[in-house]
Image (cartoon, rainbow, N blue to C red; front, side):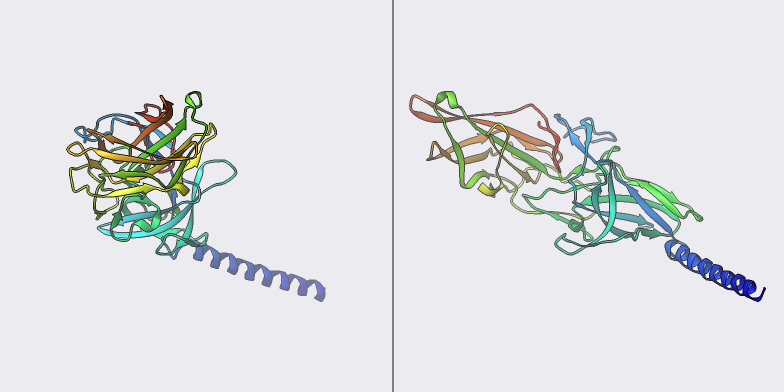
Length: 335
């Protein structure tokens, strides 16, 4: 009997110890009385063609398709209550081919992921607005964006993309925060280059400078808040950018494709100039064309198809602005 009592006594001690451990874990997970925040990603909008410069109202008329964010990219969540903001960084992952999810992480000033963890954002009860930006490091009390950068974020100009307003109540252990789809802040230009074999073009390649785009916005743009957008205005445009040889990819059909993100701008007073630095049948060849009467809006993609031909022993490039559309990471649809 003494042996039985000893076993029972040890079992009771073990149970008390286990209960104490479980209580400690619950207290730790509960965030000292605060609520664990679980953001729910909705993707980003792909914008369709349209002129919405004068339709700035509650609903954007051209947001009709949602696509995933770039796998492995980062996102910064901003929770604001009574004018005070709290941020948390996440990495975007797709588990088992399902929906994209946000996993807490720590990043450095350059946006590199230092570590991934399971610690959620904890907030006290109250009324919050939740906004987001990707990549995460672009927001640090302000957002500075230059030509060549792709940045997607909450956009408070439109009902479909505005910040989420959610109230967290006392007693909640966790709260799911559904985010509205994000929207590209910059514009995108793509160039697809293909040789016409029937005219004698056997090969095309790009030289080191690739594709040069002149007369783009001169200075970087700074936004004070996540949720603001970049207006396509008439401004200084004595600037250029290159899609270098290493950034141009070979497509399945053998064509070459390059793309670049640019700051929105109204270039109607002064046409943009595009210079193609190519090797056609092994011969260095340069083509130049102008893009006139063009406004580059944030969230839109402007796509150009260029066909290289040889006619009467002269190499020519016929280009057109296409009207097809495609899902793109950090981009929009053609206009």
